[in-house]
Amino acid sequence: MNKAWIYVFLTSFFELVWIYGFNVATTWWHWAILVPIIILDFLILSKACESLPTGTVYA
Image 1: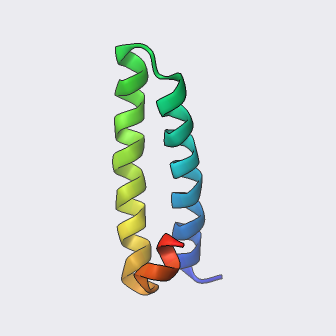
Image 2: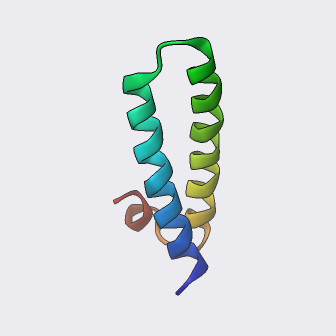
């Protein structure tokens, strides 16, 4: 399997985590966990876009 596809699966997982986190975050420490997850998600997303077309990765 191509490494870029692994990045796509990881970014999909992290997007589900932080979208769920938006619904349950009520205290500052929830947000302290959620913000690094969002940053990590966008970093992995950009790594996937280096090898695959952006439309494919975003879809």
